[in-house]
Amino acid sequence: MASNDQQSFAWYEYVVFSSMFVATGAIGLYFGFTRKKTDNTVKEYMFGGGKMPVLPIALSLIASFGSGLNLLGLPAEVYVFGTQIGAVMLSILLATIFLNIFFLPIIYNLNASSMFEGGLKAVAWSDALQSIFIAAAMITVLILGIVRAGGISNIMATAGNGERLEFFNFDVDPTRRNTFWTVVIGMTFTWVKFLALDPVSFQRYASVATYRQARQVSWIMCAGVIVTKIICLSSGLIIYAYYHDCDPVMTKKVSKPGQILPYYALDIAGKYPGFNGIFLAGVIGTALSSLSTSLNTLSGTLLDDFIRPLSPKKINDSLANIILKMTVVILGIVAGALVFLVEKMGTIMQGAIALNGIACGGTLFIYIFGMFYPWGNAKGAICGTLAGMAATIWIATGAQLAIISGDIKYPGKVMSTAGCSSNQTIPDGLNSTFSGFPGYGTEVIISNDVPYLYRLSYLYYGLIALTFGSLVAVLVSLFTGNQDLTKLDPKLIIPQLRQFLPKDNDKDKFYIKEIENDCDKPLQEIIDEDLPSNQQKLLQ
Image (tube, rainbow, N blue to C red; front, top):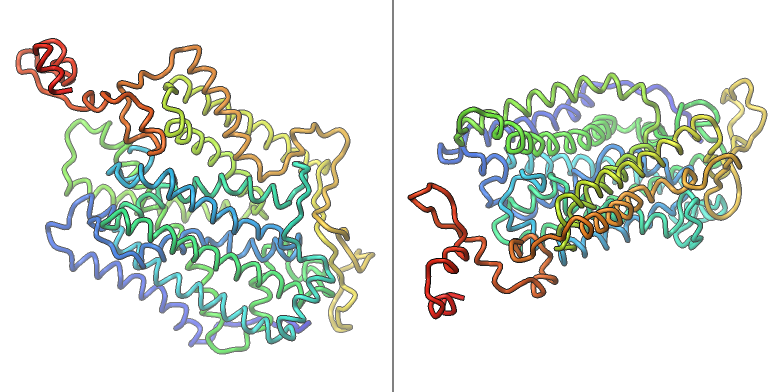
């Protein structure tokens, strides 16, 4: 293994690194100063006027999902536990299929700023630019890594000998950390939420001009995210091939596996002029991309769901546009301040996925229940949401406490320091040249005192929330009275079920203002009360 000397930033590194921020800022200034007065509206700010090109929107989504957690965490996951997590690519494909069949026909026509209704141009183009920096950094590491590791065949042979190549572990035991089933089943539900119901995704689909373009965005995004996963998985295998007999974690060169990619990148490519700047720009670009899209969308959600309802007077488009921008600035300052808290939290890869599972399961349940079960009522939805999230939080909390106490351990696969050179310092107290467990699959060490539910794979948390929530919601709806289907808007139900709804419920969506009592009256009620039977039949 090559030594990792301390790398310093030369002037040209600062130039490369700063170029991303200069270009990103220039994009924001361009769209800020060149817009017309007619563009100063909420629709223009939130959806780019509904006329954004397909490619930058798709790249914006790819950059959003290629977060720092993915860029740094996925190679570390492969390095320690193997490639079984790569089955998530099948989950992404399945989630995109579900998106196009069931969800996109509904969400594209809602005309809402998020699924919670409740400067897209600059954000989308900035994301597209940042995705270029991300790709440049990762591809550079990939190419140099392949060369330094002796070629693809040598990488695959080393990974095979180290039992890192694992894609089809069909063990059905739900307590295993990563198997084909835990990854595909568990992550499919998580990715359906990301792709279909996340405000960031929804805003992007609504920003293009046609439904066909929205579908194109979804498939380009799917392909791009899968390619990103392949690059990250390959990076993990390359890093393992390079450090398989001199683990930087065991030798304390890095304190945790999540730091292995930056350490490796500087180890093999830090001597090349400009690389440090490109790599740092790529890593920070992933964070900025996720942050910018989230802040832009969150500001719209706050405006529609909190500020407008609580405002004593009507908020016009010009004022709303100012509020949106001020909200983004305030939220950005808060997010920046939280950095000092997050850096104290240690490794968060598994914790982040577990928390996503809890939140995604609860959110996904609400919309699946509403879109797929027309008979469900509000009481059922509320009770189901609370039950699903309570069950998952209970299980996740119990599992986390067991991990903290040492009753559940994930030692990972075998690593070694047997090949470390004589001039490398081995930490005092390291009494073995090997760590981890051999064999197919990921070993989980569990105390007999741990309840079975706490042993379940963290990848199943979203499915647990969805299952518990659906069961409770259906039962509550049955006992409290199902939804009246004649008053249900068919546009809120998946297209495949609309043919089973009553044929006359469309009329209930039309209202006529009655001057005498100044109230809205359903058109169907007026037809029934005020028209002769022959005219009623004609209108019906």
